[in-house]
Length: 557
Image (cartoon, rainbow, N blue to C red; front, side, top):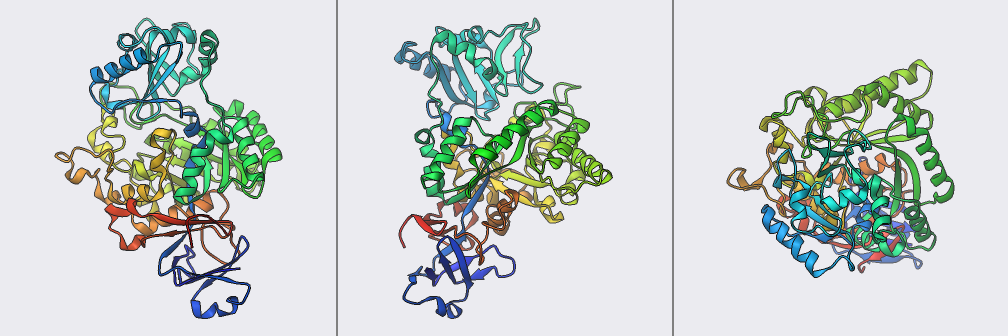
């Protein structure tokens, strides 16, 4: 039995939000409250820790993150951060000369600023000037666009007669239908095996425990004790995580989602999820969610918009499916007792999503079927004011990646939207005020940005609308704050979104997310009380100790 006394404990339990003592027995919390009432636990068998007035919080929950993608990106080459295309091309050329194709047969660079090119994107001929003897890819900063050279197009086997994989995954083409070298939503991956076979090489992208070690080490160091994997990459990834858990080396609760593309392939993907449930479910691992990308990104111009693009009349972006088909997906998930987590960015995608939930709930009611599916809408970057109250009405959970709240993606969306619409982006307070459940996450997808998963960094950006790493022009935006200031999120909302609300999204609220008797002893000790720290300094809070399932996995007591 362990007793932690003389602490400032924020329990995230609405009935008893503050305490100074917490008692654990094994992996379970058995008491949270005032120290004078905890004397009965302080017997010979108890180990008593005087925390010295430091703050204890529930273990953090990142409710949308990508361990597989982060781990598979380790071999990528980091580009210098520049808006000068010639400087970027000089770096690419020099790197190619220093590393001949015999050493690196395929080079994957990240990132070029999305703002480096206009809505027409880059062309292959420009990249050919730097390297033409092997396939080369430059990933854009938003991770939804990439720029490839002619050799890569050739080895992929893609030409004007090759159909695009989907409405979102496309090779941008010239007037004759030939690929220009600009690719949206990783369309090239569908043809990657052609290229790898041609060059006789594959990148080091296995998802062994060793490959994923940096990711899970960061989770432990950051105090993140539960995650939602928003897109399971491979069977190997799940087997590795399962083996880590069986060996006692998985220090996070893990909930993983299986991706589908359209209603037609949903039954097959549900069958895959059932396989994962059967083979890999443990006390720490579960699978209960299907994942769909409904549209693209605002910066790519392929989000689903209620308004036509400012420079392209008649273009409202792209959407993978309309209301009727999406409603059918919800009906099927509901019958299967599964949740549906949807990437959606544009205001039209949000409206279609809400309309689909409403239609599916009506169908369920007409059929006498209970509504058990939990819809989770991720990102929701721009929402029409008339739709702000619908998540609360329909029981939709909203998931937001806090570290995007400032200048991370710059002004690129204004290539397609008016400035007025751009300024309305990333606004969640009206939803919160209407009673919607809002959860927070990082959605990091690569080693390049993995450090930004640190929860107090995300809290700082969301609380200030200022990104200390990628600030907006201070001459245009005072203090580099992304407008509108009314969209800043308060600390209590942020703490709940990273703890108990995240647990509700993952359907683990009876086990984790708050510090209450009967729940699992997942908690962190930080060096400063977040309530005493100015919003602009939240990222400097240090996670000194992490306790997972009642065991100290980081720090000293």
